[in-house]
Image (cartoon, rainbow over all chains, first blue to last red; front, side):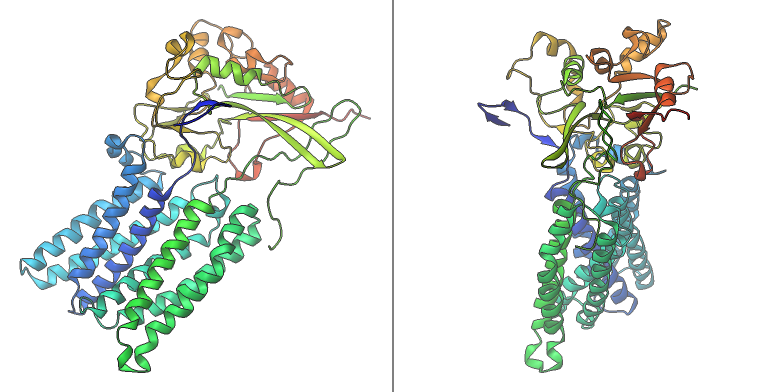
Length: 304
Length: 219
């Protein structure tokens, strides 16, 4: 509670999501990417358990952060009440088989269960994880109060950055032998897709004429996101091609891909989440005055 | 059918915020939370500037995005168009606030009163502790409407069945009523005046109409 002499006691008033909500999108995306990599590794008969475990932990951490954000955490079960229209409910519903299949796959793997069933469960986990990530992307799209989230091209960006972050972590795991050696290549491919998705999202925002503050927040991180999160990361991922002495560099490149993706998501969820604000299309006619047409205040209607 | 709406005549509103005060008195909203706000907009650039007062709040949309977004079904829409929040179900995720294009929703995490730690007599009577940690917004004084209708009164016509803000408005800028009743005051105002709705492009069908001019007179 803030107190000031001028205004008196003031409650902590919340109208937006904070870092705890952003962490859910970070954990969900990275976790899904890791689980995708784990499924591919499992299908190929390669090491997959560390990546699957890490993926599940990432998703679980994200959901735990949401639990810390909601005002009535002991009612969290109510989140399952509205699958008809709410993408948040759908996210929660999909999380159940995600953890069920993933957990069972790990238990069977560690118990030396049938490999075919373990592989099938891991692939099933990846399928549900993709559904989970899609629900997260649609949560943002469904928020009609935030123009920067309404842009349709945000969905491919959220999907691609999730895959990029996860395979980036997978590349780091690969450096320690806990993931397949193809992980850096996968991270590089998804990273290229993410660059395209990011540029597409930026163009979409400008075309839609979203609030200037949203564009400013995203434009502020844009150059660094592209240079460090992609340019530098790609060089590091590809470094072993120049010399085997650089075998450790893909791990750093993968981490760069992941952390810059988290940065972009944190910016989208928190800083670019500018509401539509209030606007009126016309002013009232008073006395002998006339009405005037009003443009949206603080909105950029042309390419910025 | 019945569809309750609010009509705000921007030509009449003087920005006195009596509606805001009446709402806060009726609903004991804490400091910083206004279910009925009056925006003070400056339009144009000096020296060609116009000042417009715009009452706003939950628009009780016909296609409310908050209802679709709500994961717990706490936010619902009644048959008469009023959008409500069940404080006993809401989990306080605030997704509805982000889905709302009208900045109509708030959440506070602790009770607080207008004059410090202790509630005033009015707040003691009216403050609802269930609103802590969950989303809250304008209800169109739904309890008053329901009680009035049960007593055979007409919301918008009989003060005992009308939201506090419309009752309190000193300039007659706020008019509440049933838009599906062709004889209601709101229907007549909308027939006889030019109006707009805020953020019509959002496709939410807001139940808040703003009058800005008379209909053009026939030649």
